[in-house]
View 1: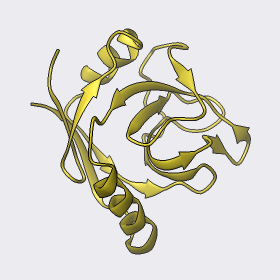
View 2: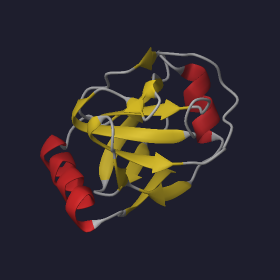
View 3: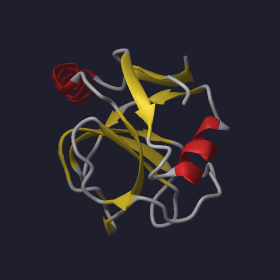
View 4: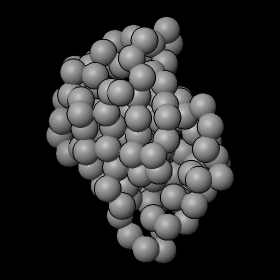
Amino acid sequence: MDGLRVTAGPFGARFEDEAAPKTCAAFRAHMSFTSEAVHVRWSGEGVWMPLGDLDFGVGYENHTSYPEPRQIILYPGGISETEVLLAYGGVHFASKMGQLAGKLFITLPSGLVSLRKLGAMTLWQGAPPVAFAIV
């Protein structure tokens, strides 16, 4: 398994290859990946990285509307734009159209305190850069 670094911290991370192999493979194919973290408007305590109309070409896999803190989900587009969401607290994943479900495909094994700081910083100071890279 490849190591993964999410830089907005930086945070070590791991792909959930057993639970979401197609999503992990599709995301790896787009690595290294950079965006900006924006605080969620509808979902609770999380930040999201908008990806516009980027198509990862994968269907339903390991979907959830309630990622736990330190979990990252990929929403493949459809009702809303394609996005990656990182939960730092309680999240009920949604858009202005209602509840959404995303593919849980990355977990950060530690760093919850730092994630909460990232969430507060994003909410009050704006969009920090975020990068996903194989290490």
